[in-house]
Length: 372
Image (tube, rainbow, N blue to C red; front, top):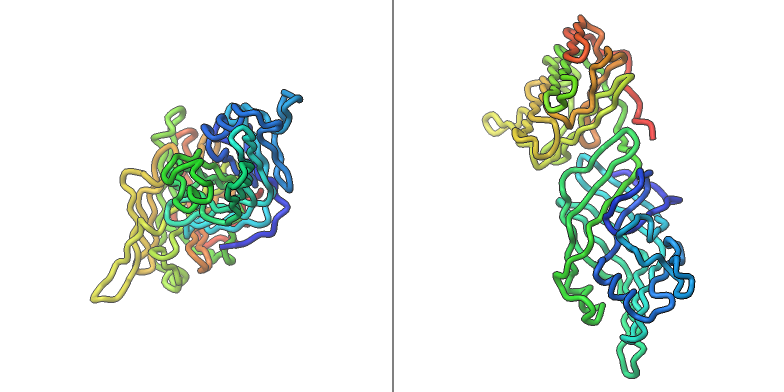
């Protein structure tokens, strides 16, 4: 996992129609029904944001605070991040937010503050933690000030990766028992929380790559039929591959296919890899996703110094409207140096249909990190 200091802007709203996302943003609105309940009261303002958090102003200047149409537009809450870090191959990430959003309902005698939420991705879910402060204005009431896990949210799938961003999305979350207690019964354990979208810059860092020769790099396309796209990569046994220290069962892997006209990165999570053993000794690894549930990579094997990869479908980013130039393929896993392939061999190209480079020598170097 790489870790980066802040100076980021995090937009936190309900999962609604959003503008074109820039990096460093989180879309989460806590709970739409709770927001509507707060606004139905007499708070003036009913919802405010500060101390590093911002919101779209309420057009009702008499009541003030944040726009009540939370969930109907994006950018209602904005959080400043202290730091973020992630590892795509390991399927983990963390974002630390800074800011305060206050929900005021004087007719029901409380003010609820949500302070400095943080977001952790691991094990196929997002965990949201933060400080909860409840000031009870009813005489004799009990106030609360705790930092706790607020809710957990299942990821809808692997993150979407572009040359500029990596985006995680979740389904609806559930309030934890600890948060329900902290909220004094305003919400119950298991109550639904709005889905989360996390957008960060794509900056997955890997050690310097090792150029290797390849037997075949084949791309297939079909104009207007992205589901018919295909990808085949074959690397014959050679010293550079034999010497790799990959362990995708533990670390997962990432495949990047980049040229002058496209740049696609595809995740091969650890959960889809198995070790290949012979007489109790691991000789290689095999990846399988025959139904393409994770992404467009259908299969991969790394065994006996050979690497073979097959992919298909609309999830592949390449287009063959024109002949790719400077095409490179990069296979990365964990902290080991990546393998990178070029296409300097015999090339056959058919516009809109196929590109094949055979018997390719090792390239002079490996492509740099994707531009952000």
